[in-house]
Amino acid sequence: MSQIIDKINQIRQDNPQNLMARYFSAEYFNGLNEADQARLLGIFASGIENPDSSMGAYAQAPEDYDKFSTALDPLIRDFHGIADGIEIAQKHDWPNAETANCNLAEIDPKLKDVSMRVRVARNASTYPLPGAMSKDQRISFENEAVAAFEKLIEDEAFGGQYLSITPGSKYEISSAEYDKRVAAHQMFKDMSSDRFLNVAGISADWPYGRGMYVSRDQDFLVWVGEEDHLRIMSMMSGGDLGALFGRLHAGLKKLTGLLPPFATSPVYGNVTSCPTNLGAGMRASLHMKLPNLTKGGTDLSVVTAAAKDLGLAVRGAGGEHSAAGSDGLVDVSPSARLGVTEREIMQRLFDGAKALWALEVKA
Ligand code: ADP
Ligand code: ARG
Ligand code: MG
Image (tube, rainbow, N blue to C red; front, side, top):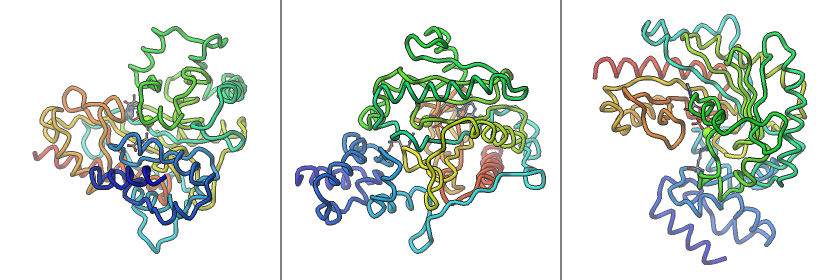
């Protein structure tokens, strides 16, 4: 055990961005019994094996957040910007007719063409989190989701199709169709090549138990078997953030009634694999072209620093850990997902986009 503690201490020195290492307490760890030490090391394994992690932890069971709150709360507070002394808590408040007035075209008519996406992460309370699922459980969860989608397919507003990548599934798609959906930003990438997810066990048994639902108009999508059991999302352009959030909220309500109960906590809100996604479980993003702030898409350092001051994170155009696209196309989204409501996330995205756009125009 002392070797692992030494390794984590070394990571703390060499990789100050690694929150797992930054807040690791050897004293707390040594006070745990052997079984709990092993469990905590399982949660921290990805951050230990990948020192360049920014978070470095993935829960394996919904209860982990309560059981190991002493170890995990400091990481959670740091990431979501919840100061010591402020209670960690999640409230929900979706935009409604009065509060959804966030149209990007008001900032600049050019922004009505940006691609908008908002997703929430959800996990069934009846299964372990993805890092600890067996292959049978992955397949069985997908089957439960398929039963829900078979009902949703009939729905006028949310009807569509299910596409599975589970070998032998009756909804199995070809690898060409899978590649096409990934390129269209609708489907998730091959998880087996993600070293963070591999160590956490989240990508195990790939591609079994994985697939996606897509509505006929292609604007309501659900991922099955990625980093969380479900990622439920809406994607559209047109600039109307209120419409985007409204579409997700309506679809989420419809689907929730068809699925097993979700894992939630009064403290942490929606329970997710990665502590970065707790709370609203929501990431709302815009694909904005910011050529001036990114030196034509070659350098994300300036835009990342400017975005950070606005509470936003910047990703490449292909999602996390990808590079900017042509014309400096980047993905910007509010970082905090816990301790902020869904409506506040929408507002932060709008206000942040406005401020970034002002910088882009004058750069
Ligand atoms: P998340 O973790 O929120 O699901 P990722 O960074 O893993 O997001 O990206 C998942 C996929 O979603 C990628 O293909 C990414 O390009 C796409 N994506 C994210 N935001 C947008 C957006 N606003 N418009 C189009 N595609 C998007
Ligand atoms: N585990 C990775 C890290 O710590 C990713 C963390 C956030 N992203 C995510 N997809 N959960 O850097
Ligand atoms: Mg992701």
